[in-house]
Image (cartoon, rainbow, N blue to C red; front, side):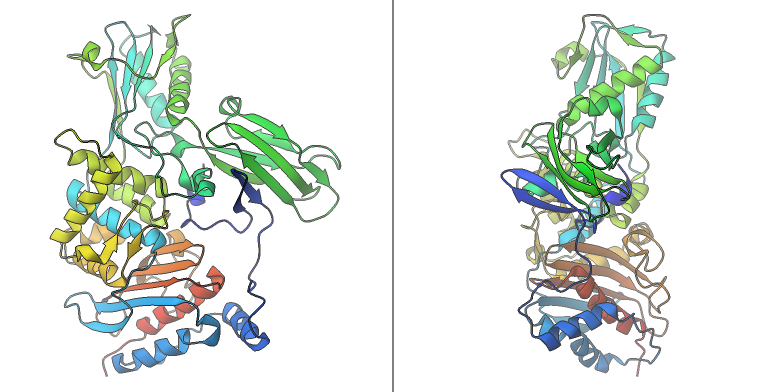
Length: 516
């Protein structure tokens, strides 16, 4: 799966997910920049469209701190935005001087801004050089035992490296292949995630043996008019694990309307709808159904390619009594990149799987005694304890996951700003800042703020889901001291594109601050 598929939990422009009869529908094409609420007065509708259509003004006129409240009011106090809830906190980094506040103490759904909490706690607890190890041990019965510890970066390339190390131990045939997938305790899916989310790549299951981000890609290609679409899997062997009912056909030039539905908990897909004969191929990234079995199949394949075969008649083993492994030495391992690099993927690409894996690793690292709680729950407790020691108000947020995919997450702009300030004044400040997207340059901000006064001087975490848009981070105004800011809008019927433009205008105001 392409890393870019994890984008702030927003449905791609070419792909909408809806629920119907316990199925997910990936609908194409999606809606462009239009105001969906036909009840808006005509003048308000036109005003909203102007917000979308107008390019960001790269004004250079200085703004005094005393003028900031009026400037922000001109951006958000508009009739077409009167249904939205805005939460804003703007402070100086060093002293925490408050420049602007609007409902900043209240709770908002923060979307992917939750990752600011998770990654701050992970960096503080684990350190920038922490790595996640995947190990292989021999078994007494002449097999191999693989222990996963939740490395979200593990791919087939690392499995091939493992197989090569095992081959160097003069191992040519094994009697069994055992997977230890219980490093993380509890459900692989957060119970508060919505149905359509857990079927897509950005809601993939989080287990101890993650491989290829626990996703697989299906591509639909039109062939001849009236004929079924050709459906290609990114991995043909893995695709054989799925059952497909293909009722989608190619039609003369027309808008594509492709629907893909999946049965709950089963690898059964039904593809319906149509694609224009000249339409480009459409790719659909799906979460795997059984991540442990998915890992074992790929590992067996890598071993076979290295010349290590599983004895005829023997099977892959999901779990085995640990007593039979005691005293055996590690014969192969692969390690993840250091945490500093994992954080870049987590925040810059807003990678939900990475954030959830790090949350669970935090839960394992502080687990000292047996408990009935899940690893994720312990991780959330660890996040709160860590941030509290940094000076973040523990009542300022309530977290249900580590990524922001859950709508049960709540956070105040003040709590987010406190986290940003605490990390800016910590010894790990540069690592944390480097993990954030840079305006007009990298990550989820690469296409925003280009050619404006914000480009290159704003580092911030984006957040988007239906009715929610957020942006929180750092600004280094050329004529003012460094700032932290958190801007969240909830309960708006306006398209995300409209809300983003307004948030971006506020950010541009901040880049023009100077003392006066």
